[in-house]
Image (cartoon, rainbow, N blue to C red; front, side, top):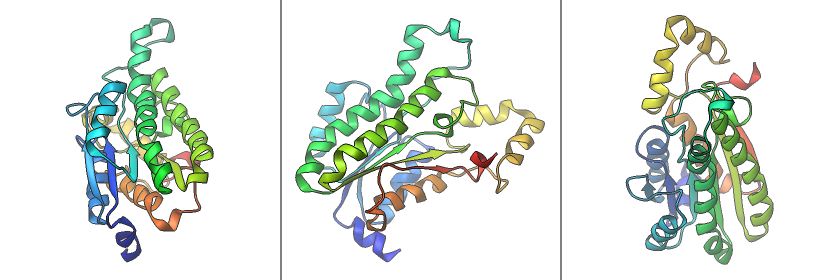
Length: 236
């Protein structure tokens, strides 16, 4: 992918949520394309806090590529809606949607000034359908990322900045998804795989390949889009 390597030369990226799985794979893929990558996870900065986000990006400096991958279910499991507390809801929305907003707000002025930028938001199949774990705030915040993607694409496109989104299917990428997979048992696991057209679970690298495309020059006329990278699960 010589053209992608060339496009990545001298570019600076920030990837959030890089402790393991998808985030780590995205870092490795962008570095392989010649991008200088700053990974950030909650042990480095609280991405739900505007002061911490501004401080982090202030230290990094100019950012050409932002991948908003941080998020998750914040350790929560399904409960009926009437049992969801204000704090339960707020924690998941903050981890997924607020962090995306704060990080995007931090990099947008510089991208606009330089006339070039790539922002990729990592949503979820839950944002296009339902949460397999039944977590209301997760499905809602992931859908919110998709709407935020469209709005930012509309706002920033005139400045040479594209904003796109990936909705991953089931990827064994972290302790939460591994625990979820194990909870299904042999029969449930087989049923899940049977609902995927290519009959396999996703790998973190599958999502990273999508990011590589969206930040490349080959995708410069694509913005505001959400692509499901899910092995065809969305077909069913």
